[in-house]
Amino acid sequence: MSAGLLAFLIAASASLLLTVPVRALAIRVGMVDLPGPRKVHLKPIPLLGGLAMYGGVMLAILIVFDGPARQQVIGIVTGATLVASVGFLDDRGVLHHQIKLFVGMPLAAVILLASGIHAQVFSQILPGHAGYWLDAALTVLWVVGITASFSILDHMDGLCAGVAAMASVFFAMLAYLNGQTLVTTLAASVLGAAAGFLRWNFKPAKIFMGDGGAMFLGFLMATLALKLRLGHASLLASWLAPVLILSATIFDTTLVTISRSRRGLLPFATPGKDHSAHRLANLGLGQRGAVLAMYLTGAVCGGAAVLVSYLSNKAAALLAAVVLSSMLVAVAWLERAPYEKQAIKKAA
Image 1 (cartoon, rainbow, N blue to C red):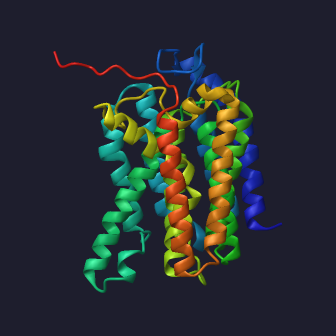
Image 2: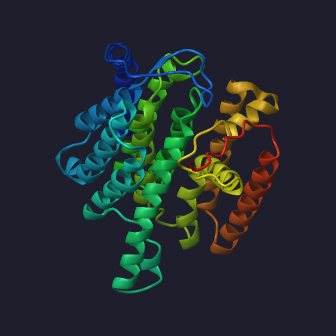
């Protein structure tokens, strides 16, 4: 049995089984998400589901990875544990929400940098220290941006876990095609953990992953993107493929950022029912249909990532232009779709 398949089976089984006691624990300690005007659920739902996914991924890493491979993932495990812990503390209500964005996520990105995991964009263009420091800055922005985007994506049953699972499929596929065993195995473990959790999280959800789970998934998605290497792909294709794989969440974050900024709201500090899935549901798809549409978006963009890996720089640039244009058209279209607008709080 291949390492990737074994990691998937271990993580899926562990996540599936651990969710039951984790749900009981959340109820016992009172960590539940109450209904509210900015929520789509109508009764209290236990949080902490991310703890089951965390356990699934970590168990797969401990069992499947040998000594040298474990050494390579120490930085990843440390950063993932940090963001998950910060998220769980936020779920508990003991941390200010800005700690996540301005302390937890950047610190996790620095841990990746210290372990040698970073973007390789500017260093391939600019020689010397200039390229490295620009890549370091890009790494921090990328990790914070993707982790935060998954944090705000967790607003509908099965959405965040399913989008992460779909992205993991294509990270694993491209890593396997390019001989990256470690990345393949790590992506397979994330896929398994998310898939196992979906058994309990798809509508009607019996448990939510909470910010701890969403940030955990987002950090691992950002890390997989940084670790992915397309050996025979063109330079532009190597940069575009990870972005395309994560286009579903990037699109949603772009939509709410533009929409909320136009209304004078802070994008990451003003939750509401104005995400892509909310708008799609209001257009007649319903909650399940909207979530499945986001899965489909992830699948199409993931397929584009596989395609772009075989294209020249010129062809990759053309495909990128088509995808970007399509996203902008979709943003403009969904911005006109019905949604509940948040009230702007006036200063006292």
